[in-house]
Image 1 (cartoon, rainbow, N blue to C red):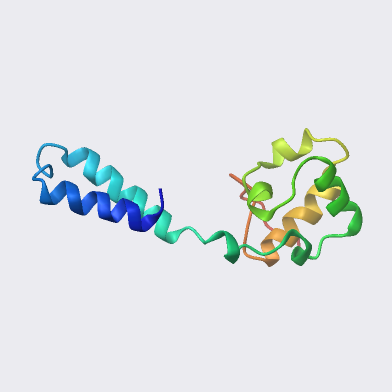
Image 2 (cartoon, rainbow, N blue to C red; image 1 turned 120 degrees about the vertical axis):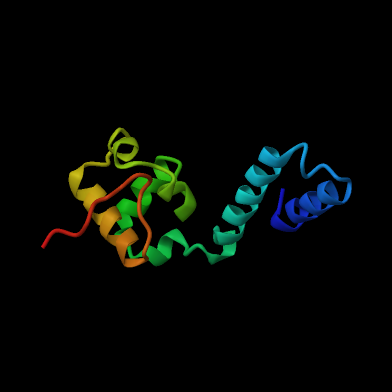
Length: 114
């Protein structure tokens, strides 16, 4: 459901007088809509090639089924380390490239050393 459809649903529920009866549901739905509005559109994500990763890292990510930046950011460092050919050095290169793009891996609190 896109943001406009969710907002239309909230408005129609309020017009039908469902606001009081389903207050928790409406509040939850409003939070979802707010989160959707803050989430960047898919076209706003940089391309994986735009992160400045080395050819080796891009090839390793592609061979592991990671084709887009959202797919990469949805993974944790542990998820990546379990993938084939992704070690500490590759993970550090990925983290640095994501930090430069003001992105990070899921649940990552890593900062650049030095």
